[in-house]
Length: 102
Image 1 (cartoon, rainbow, N blue to C red):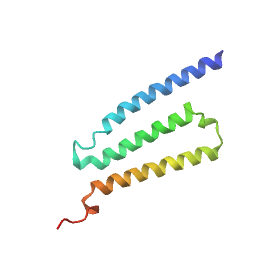
Image 2: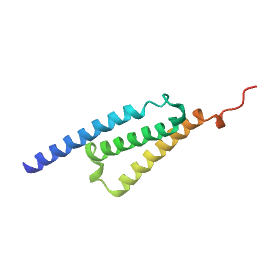
Image 3: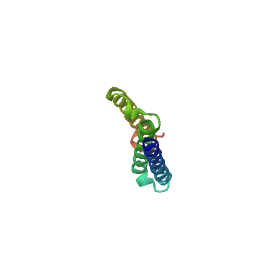
Image 4: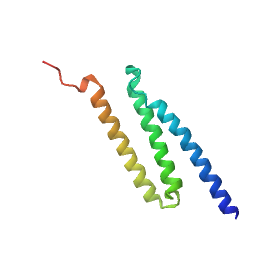
């Protein structure tokens, strides 16, 4: 019985953290408001999304009980995804990457 109660408390705590991170995502998602800070907001948005993904994978999908190889594999995949998304955003945002108009 204690195990179930502890498990429920842990899930509720994780859910509350995810809700807080969702609010942080909403704030960080305002990338276009101040264009000079857009890359920083994009990095913040990706960072918060990465934290949420790790919480969901670890707590709700049981990855924290899996072997370290699985944890490493999912962490590497998340980092590759986040770096790719940030690179795509910066390629579209930064004028250095844009070809000059004739």
